[in-house]
Image (cartoon, rainbow, N blue to C red; front, top):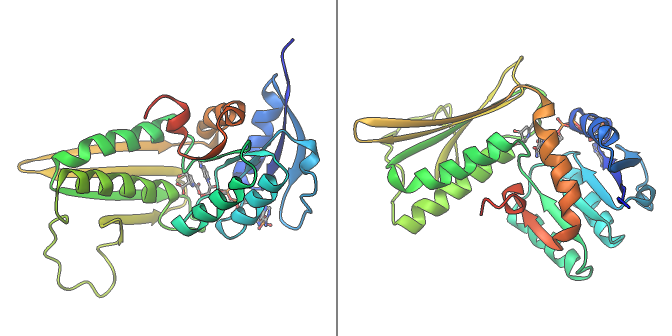
Amino acid sequence: MSTVLKVAVIGAAGRMGATVCQAVTDAADLELVGRFDMGDALGDLGGADVVVEFSVPSASLANVQHCIAQGVDVVVGTTGWTPDKLELLRESLAAQPDTGVLIAPNFAIGAILMMSFAQQAARFYESVEVIELHHPNKVDAPSGTAARTADLIGAAREEAGLGPVPDATTQDPGGARGGREHGIPVHSVRLRGLVAHQEVLFGGTGEMLTIRHDSFDRSSFMPGVVAGVRAVGQHPGLTVGLEHYLGLT
Ligand SMILES: NC(=O)C1=CN([C@@H]2O[C@H](COP(=O)(O)OP(=O)(O)OC[C@H]3O[C@@H](n4cnc5c(N)ncnc54)[C@H](OP(=O)(O)O)[C@@H]3O)[C@@H](O)[C@H]2O)C=CC1
Ligand SMILES: O=C(O)C1=N[C@H](C(=O)O)C[C@H](O)C1
């Protein structure tokens, strides 16, 4: 007999939350048992086995901690996870050792591969810059994907003994050179018409490598979200990145 997983969505009225509600409804092995949004009491989470959380960076930690306290596994797409916040989650999970939390900065398979390819390429190039491009309603910059990409590249460069990226800039009063994540320059573009896009530019002597991913529609994230929902129960504790469920690490 096949088991049906009961799923609740937090941030259900948002762009991602509404798309996830539809994806769960469309999956024969999943049942949508709760939709929660801003101002709703989470209570017993509608009796869910798994919660999907796509809200805002300022609210996500408390929402996920509520789920952990109930012993309910959580798949988190919300961005803005600092090392401090992740540590608080680990502490909450220590009291619920059978509960699983997956935080994925990006659920699109191409974006996961882009990050993995960038991590592989990092040690071969002296120069690297990340450009992320998103819809203008996005509240955070840089994107969670760009921050994670820069972290992976930065760590790979350190491991390979590479120094800082070369940059002779001495005057930049308007911040035209962008921000820095893990020492890697990151540029954030917000443009009407876009959904979610990223380029990683690598430069070496006489050559350049560009790795680009485009999400043209939020449906691109749904296979990854649904895969996360199905698998999170088998992965107690905190996992950052869907690649760990996909055999890519
Ligand atoms: N990991 C991935 O693959 C992806 C991640 N994201 C991330 O997901 C998050 C959501 O993105 P998106 O759907 O575009 O944003 P939206 O603003 O469209 O949706 C967020 C929803 O969360 C609601 N909300 C706000 N506060 C709370 C709260 N305390 N509890 C419950 N719900 C709350 C908002 O309500 P209200 O509008 O009333 O404030 C809104 O309905 C972002 O962090 C984004 O970066 C996005 C796409 C893919
Ligand atoms: O807000 C978005 O839209 C997205 N957010 C995530 C991020 O910040 O990386 C994932 C994707 O880029 C879409």
